[in-house]
Amino acid sequence: MNRSGDCESKHELVWVATPNACGSLYYNPLQWGVAPYDALLLVSFGGPEKSEDVIPFLENVLRGRNVPRQRLLAVAEHYYHFDGRSPINDQNRDLIAALREVVKIPIYWGNRNWHPLLSDTLRQMQQDGIRRAIAFATSAFGSYSGCRQYREDIQRARAEVGGNSPEIVKISPFSQHPLFLEAMTDRVRTALAQLPGARVVFTAHSVPVSMAEGGPYVQQLEAASRRVAENLSVRDWKLVYQSRSGPPTQPWLGPDICDYLRESPGDTIIAPIGFLSDHMEVMYDLDTEARAVCDELGLRMVRAGTVGTHPAMIRMIAELIAAEPVPCALTCCPAPQRPPAPVISR
Image (cartoon, rainbow, N blue to C red; front, side, top):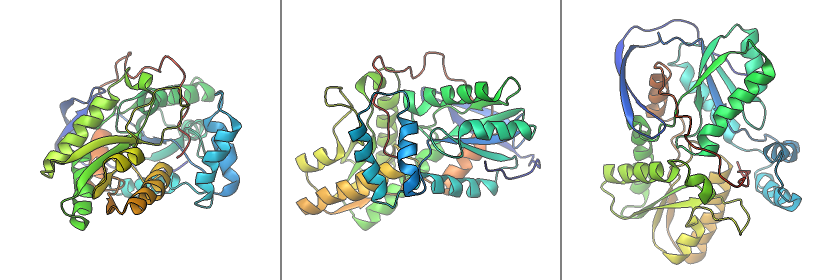
């Protein structure tokens, strides 16, 4: 559990641009800091912080899933390559520290798969007298795993805590928010300065095709990538995917980043637009595996930063938590028809 801030508020009239579940924007005039929330809840995936955590963490991710033990042990090696520590928790701590400078309500943090677990955090919020909180999930794009599943996680944790657990209002996916796009544009601009004239290859986590077909994931990724490329007058760009974890018989989104680099070699900026922070997929699948492919082929490659704690992201979150979000439609981001292999490489 993390908590910060007090109940002071600034009474400056601002206009807030907030995307709904389909990625469109609505504008809401409001008074900064006076939206009816007692707290901000940061909701994330979670990750191990030492070697001893790796297997229990992956078992949490895989609970209820028929995934071969061999696959779990193979993914564990990705973590052992970095001494068993995923960067995602540290990234969330950095985000909370940056938000403390602008958010004037208490901040709590709960994860889906590792400590601090969401149910433990909600229990602490209940003990602290929090009645209504707004939740920011660390996922910008609409999909089952990136949107609806977080809502299900919240409801499951509330049920575990009991009848007087805090009400939690989740912010919808925000991939078309101008400040998210500003932050990503700035990260790619910095990378292009190191490798002028290179093409830009945007990456996002692959998901089962059956999951993608039920939501706006691909459309939102394409729209955001196009906007960033246009902001930088980049004509040579491509959206690809990474970190597939399903069986070969199940169709997943492609092309894969490493396959694309082999099939279409050239100087490349890799821009992980589908990730808010440099967690395990970015460090292993891009900084390690994709880098090795580029070295093998003699390609120059620069990996753009994730948006992380970019000042535009901090402003965006501060704006979003000051407004009442447009609720997701009941039919948004449904689960795929066949259970997906879970994302386990964070």
